[in-house]
Length: 343
Image: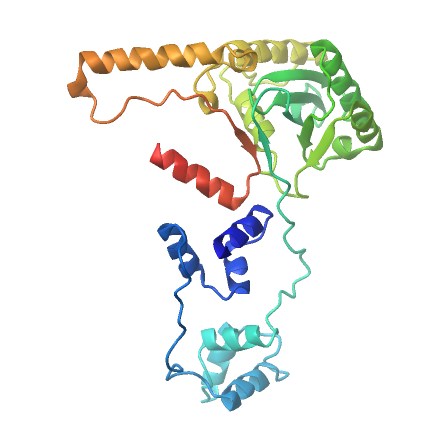
């Protein structure tokens, strides 16, 4: 039951160590229980108090020293050496930290903001369930001026569903493009999750109103966190690291449009994507990858039967990737890694 509660808290964004501490556990105990697969709680507690434990008077003295005007704005790592310079020793740095934490006097006091909670996790089990989009810059011939590439990608199949190169970055352009995609694909967008970062075009009133009218569920990354929209970022990296990517700025908007059109054709119909079993996004989106992966599996099995001495382990895994996760919780990610190791 304890493991279930902790895993549930971690899936909602809590830290494993903090969740364990709230239940009176250390992280090491939690890891040991997970390795054992659960069981009964056999903790009996210490039989004797630690011999080196500070007395109540000594803890009070540590707090009093830490709160003195000359030390209250310093960390224990600075307090202990300064006390040693005066010939005094009350406790180690770790003991100072432990006493201050128990007294609720160990808080972050810098003006920086606290970390944002993890965004909601999403999982796609088929095409047109979860879509990621973003905008990237394309250099123009005018210094300091850019063209803007709007690009929508299906997270499950990795297929580029729609794109546009524009001279401006605006929520109106994004809203027009998502409506055009729905019309071109003749799909019912109700219930589709559209994930993006927190840019102005993504959270603008026009864009949000369009999504609401279409029945699309908006999902956003954490503010100022660059890796909460990994699928679009990875796609942009593929785009800009292609050998054919121009070394010089695009001469005009039409030149940028032509190059992106060629890239989209290559990416959707020719690129063997490593994350989806080295099939093209178009084949996976249309379901043709099932037969392709099955054929590859048969080829490898026949090769192993012909020369079993050349295979020390099982053949390459050509299993289809059925689920794709966006911003999974720590427990989900750990379970996926363990399942991959076991496979």
